[in-house]
Length: 107
Image (cartoon, rainbow, N blue to C red; front, side, top):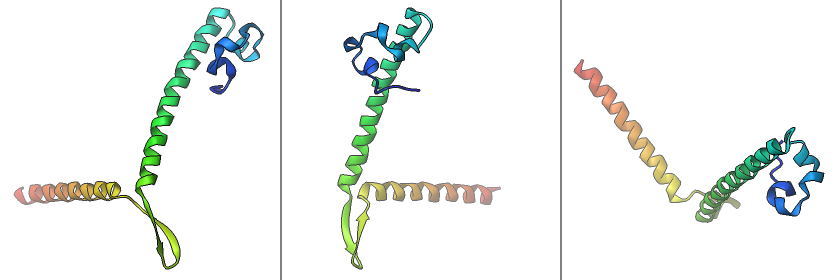
């Protein structure tokens, strides 16, 4: 039960916490409940920052892709950033294989 969308978390000043079932379910004492509520508010802020960053990265990738027709079927082409990363990884893999071969030859 995260409850990040609850009004007690999004706008705690606009809710009568003494009458809120959600707030009352957070602990046995008011101090415990306030600590739990503050923790949920902090978690929601962290979660929101992470989701916004992930969404921005995803949108940037989609905007950089292009759509072309191949045999009458629309197809998305990846942007060059993905291609460069794949090429760099292939180079690293080739170097590692070469190092292993060199080590075997030297022994």
